[in-house]
Image 1: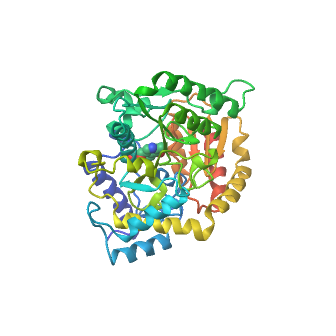
Image 2: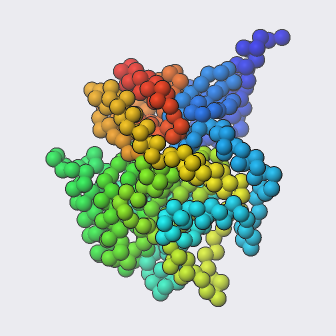
Length: 445
Ligand SMILES: *Cc1c(COP(=O)(O)O)cnc(C)c1O
């Protein structure tokens, strides 16, 4: 009989071997796993992931930005168990159910009713595709079929299916597939790190908006929509901008008859300090894409909200004027129920307010990091923190990732950019641990 320790370590090792033999992991050069071991996750609770030997990792990136209220959250678990007893899924074409109706009503109410209709899919990239297709189709239905082009920001990320990748500007994801992508245009990002000496983030944002204005002034007859990640451009390295960019972009889009698509797949659900990031600019987008945190990190679900006036342009006796887009799992009842449980927690726990206090605490705790000689551009928006490590070291991101794992932290830097995007349930002790150990990592490089 092997000892219990041997048994459990065998379980870890066996799972890794089987995974490498059978699973093609995302966003990964698989050969790197010859030297960088996969991490087996046996179970998770709160902000922690555990392997079979009881080794643990603080999920400081909310498992790719999806988790809001911790793993194995008792309230979301209970809602899902209850939902399982009545309906797991039914097709949404020609049928409807309570969770999808209630979720649509609640999401719409969160936009103060300005976005009255919800269209569902299962992932963020599909939400982007839906918004792009809907925008084009709206213009076609209203006698402007020549509006076929899209504009996004430099360094934008909107997902990796071909349509979403066409408006994404991350070379590593995009260049290989460039021959497959339709053309889109990128305008200057208001990322304040690029501001001139003595120029405030606000002034810089206003200057960048001129680039959008110049482009649309010349090309609006051919342009359907401008798509933007409000306040924080996530995947290209947590680039943050002043909300005035969004208010100005709204004015410009209105002036030139171009839709504004807010991709809040990452920034929605309180991540930037307000329920939606675009609220900080006092604007309403024409399309609002949501996913990631929508189910608290439990189940794949995405949604595009739009104005009733846009919805009505599809409402006709002619079938082809309708939006004939679908996904098999559109409006999945279990996912909608997880989303409802998530919204419930926001309401009953006053999460947005509580997060403000937590973020202020974190900003104090983080001073040894923000003031560190090797740390550049330490920044914070809501429950997102990011900074660059100022060292010319080969394979910096991977070294930080590995050093973090050795200190029970899950960090996944983007190039030189280290970021924290923890579940909102993270405790002050856990935040302190995150800072202390990150300082150790930065000093040990
Ligand atoms: C993650 C993300 C997407 C893509 O979502 P997936 O579910 O990964 O397809 C799109 N836009 C933004 C801003 C994102 O952060």
